[in-house]
Amino acid sequence: MANISPLLSLIAILLSSIMINHLPVASSKQWCVSKQTAKDEQLEDNINFACSNGIDCRPILPSGACFKPNTTISHASYLMNDYYQSHGRTNEACLFYFPNSGILTSTDPSYNQCIYK
Image (cartoon, rainbow, N blue to C red; front, side, top):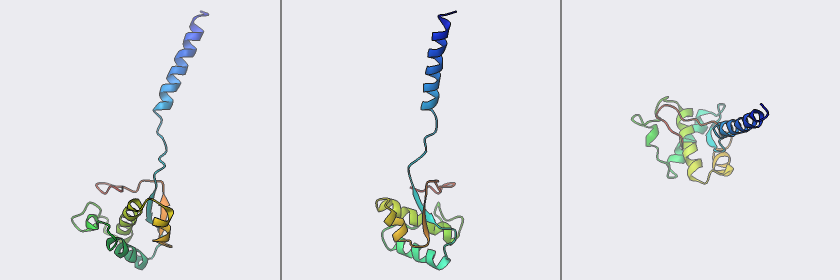
């Protein structure tokens, strides 16, 4: 019986190691999305800014993967994030260019076929 205890200890250590290696890891990735309190006029300005500064706006068109829901806040969030991701993921690329309407989140806003970078 004395030899079983070290064996059980070794098994417990191995199982713990295996379990720890399979735990989900928190993502350090961030996304820039619209604040829920943002005004539609500001969000429309953000959409125009993104589309006129090299962001592909086709995903928010009626045939695009991010058209639905067909809301200003949803469309703006997608484009604001695309701008943020393509401009170095800096605080400035979200909070400076989208003042009072952009917010950083660590929760992936992707849904259905609309995949946020």
